[in-house]
Image 1 (cartoon, rainbow, N blue to C red):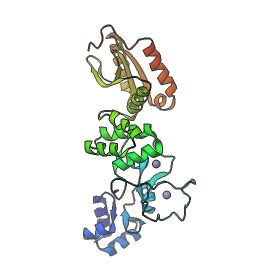
Image 2: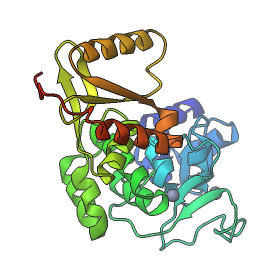
Image 3: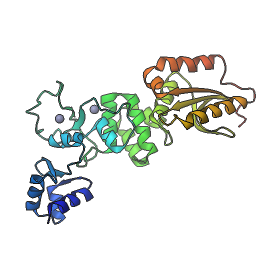
Length: 295
Ligand SMILES: [Zn+2]
Ligand SMILES: [Zn+2]
Protein backbone atom coordinates (compact mmCIF):
# COMPACT_ATOMS: atom_id res chain seq x y z
CA UNK A 1 0.00 0.00 0.00
CA UNK A 2 1.44 3.38 -0.98
CA UNK A 3 1.88 6.05 1.63
CA UNK A 4 -0.59 8.45 0.03
CA UNK A 5 -3.30 5.83 0.14
CA UNK A 6 -2.55 5.34 3.84
CA UNK A 7 -3.16 9.06 4.25
CA UNK A 8 -6.39 8.56 2.31
CA UNK A 9 -7.56 5.97 4.84
CA UNK A 10 -6.72 8.34 7.73
CA UNK A 11 -8.60 11.12 5.96
CA UNK A 12 -11.66 8.91 5.57
CA UNK A 13 -11.50 8.29 9.33
CA UNK A 14 -11.72 12.01 10.02
CA UNK A 15 -8.04 12.94 9.78
CA UNK A 16 -6.95 11.23 12.98
CA UNK A 17 -6.87 7.47 13.59
CA UNK A 18 -5.55 4.84 15.97
CA UNK A 19 -3.16 2.15 14.80
CA UNK A 20 -5.72 -0.51 15.72
CA UNK A 21 -8.36 1.13 13.50
CA UNK A 22 -5.91 1.39 10.61
CA UNK A 23 -4.80 -2.23 10.96
CA UNK A 24 -8.48 -3.23 11.02
CA UNK A 25 -8.86 -1.27 7.75
CA UNK A 26 -6.10 -3.47 6.23
CA UNK A 27 -3.32 -0.90 6.42
CA UNK A 28 -0.01 -2.76 6.97
CA UNK A 29 1.89 -1.58 10.04
CA UNK A 30 4.99 -1.07 7.90
CA UNK A 31 3.16 1.37 5.64
CA UNK A 32 2.44 3.61 8.66
CA UNK A 33 6.11 3.95 9.49
CA UNK A 34 6.87 4.73 5.84
CA UNK A 35 4.10 7.36 5.75
CA UNK A 36 5.50 9.08 8.85
CA UNK A 37 9.05 9.08 7.45
CA UNK A 38 7.86 10.59 4.18
CA UNK A 39 5.76 13.25 5.92
CA UNK A 40 2.46 11.90 4.62
CA UNK A 41 1.32 11.35 8.19
CA UNK A 42 2.15 12.74 11.62
CA UNK A 43 2.44 10.57 14.69
CA UNK A 44 1.51 12.85 17.61
CA UNK A 45 1.97 9.94 19.99
CA UNK A 46 2.47 6.23 19.93
CA UNK A 47 -0.51 4.51 18.36
CA UNK A 48 -2.10 7.62 16.85
CA UNK A 49 -1.67 9.00 13.32
CA UNK A 50 -2.88 12.29 11.87
CA UNK A 51 -2.81 14.11 8.56
CA UNK A 52 -0.18 16.88 8.26
CA UNK A 53 -2.92 19.52 7.94
CA UNK A 54 -4.37 18.58 11.35
CA UNK A 55 -4.71 21.77 13.43
CA UNK A 56 -1.67 22.31 15.66
CA UNK A 57 -3.97 22.56 18.68
CA UNK A 58 -5.30 19.07 18.15
CA UNK A 59 -1.79 17.68 17.63
CA UNK A 60 -0.81 19.38 20.90
CA UNK A 61 -3.67 17.71 22.80
CA UNK A 62 -3.00 14.33 21.23
CA UNK A 63 0.68 14.54 22.11
CA UNK A 64 -0.30 14.62 25.80
CA UNK A 65 -2.41 11.45 25.42
CA UNK A 66 -5.24 13.93 25.67
CA UNK A 67 -8.13 15.25 23.61
CA UNK A 68 -9.50 18.71 22.93
CA UNK A 69 -11.57 19.91 25.87
CA UNK A 70 -13.64 22.82 27.11
CA UNK A 71 -13.58 25.89 24.83
CA UNK A 72 -11.08 24.24 22.45
CA UNK A 73 -13.46 21.30 21.95
CA UNK A 74 -16.34 23.78 21.55
CA UNK A 75 -14.52 25.50 18.69
CA UNK A 76 -13.82 22.11 17.14
CA UNK A 77 -17.55 21.36 17.32
CA UNK A 78 -18.24 24.72 15.65
CA UNK A 79 -19.90 26.17 18.74
CA UNK A 80 -19.95 29.86 19.53
CA UNK A 81 -17.42 30.94 22.14
CA UNK A 82 -16.87 34.37 23.64
CA UNK A 83 -13.56 34.76 21.77
CA UNK A 84 -11.64 32.91 19.10
CA UNK A 85 -9.04 31.58 21.53
CA UNK A 86 -6.16 32.47 19.22
CA UNK A 87 -4.11 33.92 22.05
CA UNK A 88 -4.70 31.26 24.66
CA UNK A 89 -3.33 27.78 25.26
CA UNK A 90 -5.30 24.85 23.98
CA UNK A 91 -7.62 23.28 26.56
CA UNK A 92 -6.72 19.61 26.80
CA UNK A 93 -8.41 16.87 28.77
CA UNK A 94 -6.21 14.06 30.03
CA UNK A 95 -7.86 11.12 31.74
CA UNK A 96 -7.27 11.16 35.49
CA UNK A 97 -6.41 7.47 35.08
CA UNK A 98 -3.55 8.15 32.67
CA UNK A 99 -0.06 9.24 33.31
CA UNK A 100 0.07 12.28 31.07
CA UNK A 101 2.86 12.10 28.58
CA UNK A 102 4.87 15.29 28.06
CA UNK A 103 3.95 16.40 31.57
CA UNK A 104 7.62 15.93 32.39
CA UNK A 105 8.27 18.86 30.05
CA UNK A 106 5.57 20.94 31.67
CA UNK A 107 4.94 19.31 35.06
CA UNK A 108 3.41 22.31 36.80
CA UNK A 109 0.02 22.75 35.19
CA UNK A 110 -0.45 25.95 37.21
CA UNK A 111 2.43 27.59 35.38
CA UNK A 112 1.99 29.17 31.98
CA UNK A 113 2.39 26.16 29.74
CA UNK A 114 1.49 24.81 26.36
CA UNK A 115 -1.98 23.69 27.49
CA UNK A 116 -4.75 24.45 29.93
CA UNK A 117 -5.02 20.93 31.32
CA UNK A 118 -8.38 19.52 32.41
CA UNK A 119 -8.24 16.32 34.46
CA UNK A 120 -11.74 15.98 35.89
CA UNK A 121 -13.94 12.95 35.34
CA UNK A 122 -16.11 12.74 32.24
CA UNK A 123 -19.61 11.37 31.74
CA UNK A 124 -19.14 10.00 28.22
CA UNK A 125 -16.17 8.20 26.76
CA UNK A 126 -14.28 10.82 24.74
CA UNK A 127 -13.58 10.37 21.06
CA UNK A 128 -10.05 10.35 19.72
CA UNK A 129 -10.02 14.10 19.08
CA UNK A 130 -12.36 15.67 21.64
CA UNK A 131 -14.56 15.12 24.66
CA UNK A 132 -18.31 14.58 24.19
CA UNK A 133 -20.41 17.70 23.79
CA UNK A 134 -21.91 17.17 27.27
CA UNK A 135 -18.47 17.03 28.85
CA UNK A 136 -17.30 19.95 26.73
CA UNK A 137 -20.16 22.09 28.10
CA UNK A 138 -19.58 20.95 31.70
CA UNK A 139 -15.93 21.89 31.37
CA UNK A 140 -16.80 25.34 30.01
CA UNK A 141 -19.09 25.95 32.99
CA UNK A 142 -16.30 25.05 35.42
CA UNK A 143 -13.53 26.82 33.50
CA UNK A 144 -15.26 29.87 32.01
CA UNK A 145 -18.42 30.34 34.04
CA UNK A 146 -22.18 30.40 33.44
CA UNK A 147 -22.34 32.92 30.58
CA UNK A 148 -19.80 31.15 28.38
CA UNK A 149 -21.55 27.87 29.20
CA UNK A 150 -24.99 29.23 28.35
CA UNK A 151 -23.88 30.73 25.02
CA UNK A 152 -22.12 27.50 24.01
CA UNK A 153 -25.15 25.43 25.08
CA UNK A 154 -27.57 27.52 22.99
CA UNK A 155 -25.15 27.30 20.07
CA UNK A 156 -25.03 23.50 20.41
CA UNK A 157 -28.84 23.38 20.59
CA UNK A 158 -29.29 25.68 17.62
CA UNK A 159 -26.94 23.56 15.48
CA UNK A 160 -28.34 20.29 16.82
CA UNK A 161 -24.85 19.29 17.98
CA UNK A 162 -26.70 18.20 21.13
CA UNK A 163 -30.07 16.42 21.17
CA UNK A 164 -32.93 16.61 23.63
CA UNK A 165 -31.88 13.46 25.47
CA UNK A 166 -28.34 14.79 25.92
CA UNK A 167 -29.66 18.14 27.14
CA UNK A 168 -31.48 16.18 29.85
CA UNK A 169 -28.34 14.24 30.75
CA UNK A 170 -26.35 17.47 30.88
CA UNK A 171 -28.93 19.06 33.18
CA UNK A 172 -28.87 16.07 35.53
CA UNK A 173 -25.06 16.23 35.68
CA UNK A 174 -25.01 19.88 36.80
CA UNK A 175 -25.17 21.07 40.36
CA UNK A 176 -28.61 22.35 41.37
CA UNK A 177 -27.77 26.08 41.21
CA UNK A 178 -26.82 25.76 37.55
CA UNK A 179 -29.70 23.67 36.22
CA UNK A 180 -31.90 26.67 35.52
CA UNK A 181 -29.45 27.69 32.80
CA UNK A 182 -30.37 24.54 30.87
CA UNK A 183 -34.10 25.16 31.45
CA UNK A 184 -33.68 28.75 30.25
CA UNK A 185 -31.83 27.75 27.05
CA UNK A 186 -33.63 27.77 23.70
CA UNK A 187 -33.22 25.82 20.46
CA UNK A 188 -33.52 28.87 18.21
CA UNK A 189 -30.99 31.41 19.50
CA UNK A 190 -29.40 32.92 16.41
CA UNK A 191 -26.06 33.86 17.92
CA UNK A 192 -24.04 33.85 21.09
CA UNK A 193 -24.62 37.59 21.33
CA UNK A 194 -28.34 36.93 21.59
CA UNK A 195 -27.70 34.32 24.26
CA UNK A 196 -25.61 36.71 26.34
CA UNK A 197 -28.07 39.59 25.91
CA UNK A 198 -31.09 37.50 26.93
CA UNK A 199 -29.32 35.93 29.91
CA UNK A 200 -28.04 39.23 31.27
CA UNK A 201 -31.35 41.04 30.88
CA UNK A 202 -33.13 38.10 32.51
CA UNK A 203 -30.85 38.66 35.50
CA UNK A 204 -32.14 42.23 35.87
CA UNK A 205 -35.71 41.00 35.68
CA UNK A 206 -36.60 41.66 32.05
CA UNK A 207 -38.52 39.11 29.99
CA UNK A 208 -37.62 39.01 26.31
CA UNK A 209 -39.76 37.39 23.63
CA UNK A 210 -37.32 35.77 21.17
CA UNK A 211 -37.37 35.58 17.37
CA UNK A 212 -40.56 37.58 17.01
CA UNK A 213 -42.15 37.98 13.59
CA UNK A 214 -43.62 41.44 13.04
CA UNK A 215 -45.57 41.82 9.80
CA UNK A 216 -44.02 44.56 7.67
CA UNK A 217 -40.78 44.46 9.66
CA UNK A 218 -39.75 40.80 9.59
CA UNK A 219 -38.16 38.68 12.29
CA UNK A 220 -36.56 40.64 15.09
CA UNK A 221 -34.27 39.21 17.74
CA UNK A 222 -36.26 40.26 20.80
CA UNK A 223 -39.28 42.27 21.90
CA UNK A 224 -39.75 43.52 25.45
CA UNK A 225 -43.43 43.61 26.33
CA UNK A 226 -45.50 45.41 23.66
CA UNK A 227 -43.15 47.29 21.40
CA UNK A 228 -39.51 47.62 22.47
CA UNK A 229 -37.37 45.78 19.92
CA UNK A 230 -33.81 44.71 20.80
CA UNK A 231 -31.42 43.63 18.07
CA UNK A 232 -28.02 42.01 18.69
CA UNK A 233 -25.99 42.60 15.55
CA UNK A 234 -23.15 40.25 14.70
CA UNK A 235 -20.63 40.61 11.88
CA UNK A 236 -23.31 40.00 9.24
CA UNK A 237 -24.82 43.44 9.82
CA UNK A 238 -22.36 45.25 7.56
CA UNK A 239 -22.54 46.63 4.03
CA UNK A 240 -25.92 46.13 2.36
CA UNK A 241 -27.55 44.83 5.46
CA UNK A 242 -26.75 48.09 7.27
CA UNK A 243 -29.17 49.82 4.93
CA UNK A 244 -31.77 47.08 5.38
CA UNK A 245 -31.44 47.44 9.15
CA UNK A 246 -32.08 51.18 8.94
CA UNK A 247 -35.16 50.58 6.80
CA UNK A 248 -36.42 47.98 9.26
CA UNK A 249 -35.95 50.35 12.16
CA UNK A 250 -37.88 53.10 10.35
CA UNK A 251 -40.72 50.75 9.39
CA UNK A 252 -40.86 49.47 12.96
CA UNK A 253 -41.01 53.03 14.32
CA UNK A 254 -43.81 53.89 11.88
CA UNK A 255 -45.74 50.88 13.22
CA UNK A 256 -45.30 52.04 16.82
CA UNK A 257 -42.19 50.06 17.80
CA UNK A 258 -38.91 51.39 19.15
CA UNK A 259 -35.67 49.62 18.21
CA UNK A 260 -32.49 49.47 20.26
CA UNK A 261 -29.62 47.96 18.32
CA UNK A 262 -26.37 46.73 19.89
CA UNK A 263 -23.28 45.25 18.31
CA UNK A 264 -20.91 42.61 19.60
CA UNK A 265 -18.34 45.10 20.94
CA UNK A 266 -21.05 46.75 23.06
CA UNK A 267 -22.57 43.50 24.32
CA UNK A 268 -19.24 41.86 25.12
CA UNK A 269 -17.13 44.85 26.19
CA UNK A 270 -19.46 47.68 27.22
CA UNK A 271 -22.32 45.87 28.88
CA UNK A 272 -23.02 48.66 31.41
CA UNK A 273 -23.96 50.96 28.56
CA UNK A 274 -26.25 48.36 26.95
CA UNK A 275 -27.98 47.63 30.24
CA UNK A 276 -28.48 51.28 31.15
CA UNK A 277 -29.91 52.02 27.70
CA UNK A 278 -32.44 49.18 27.99
CA UNK A 279 -33.36 50.02 31.58
CA UNK A 280 -33.77 53.72 30.71
CA UNK A 281 -36.06 52.82 27.80
CA UNK A 282 -38.16 50.61 30.08
CA UNK A 283 -38.23 53.30 32.79
CA UNK A 284 -39.68 55.69 30.20
CA UNK A 285 -42.31 53.09 29.25
CA UNK A 286 -41.00 52.76 25.70
CA UNK A 287 -41.90 49.07 25.93
CA UNK A 288 -45.59 49.79 26.45
CA UNK A 289 -48.00 50.70 23.74
CA UNK A 290 -51.71 51.42 24.05
CA UNK A 291 -52.21 49.25 21.00
CA UNK A 292 -50.47 46.42 22.83
CA UNK A 293 -49.13 43.58 20.79
CA UNK A 294 -51.22 44.39 17.80
CA UNK A 295 -49.05 42.57 15.26
ZN1 LIG B 1 -11.00 25.04 30.04
ZN1 LIG C 1 0.40 21.06 25.86
